[in-house]
Image (cartoon, rainbow, N blue to C red; front, side, top):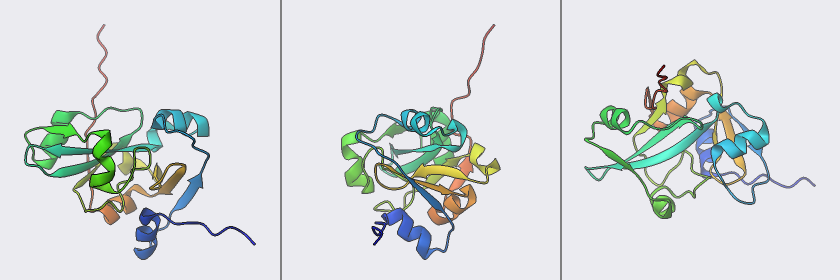
Length: 165
């Protein structure tokens, strides 16, 4: 008899909202970073998104989803959520705030519904990859479905690479 798939909170929320998705499971002894995982799995950086959690001067928390090879522009991100400035949540606090661990943090199904911003590059995609809510699990879904289930918005939140001659 086949082993029953244990669903994560994120998957249960997608099921409850009748949102179509696929999962990918892989061996993950230790999480290094999203680029390492994408390289290991042969995935394109532009469709593979990481989840960052930040807090503002107001004390509110915010969730940002951006391509794994990009860095968040703190000024742009703060402006989008109406904060003066933002700081990354310390790794040791991730579980307490989100209910997830580093490397398994997904925008879907955190302990609270924090304002969520998805990088604008996702709008042009038909499918994106996010963490599935635990190490070794990914969710493939339409970015518009992610925005719907998280009440998320799309915005430019990354540092632009500029070249000087």
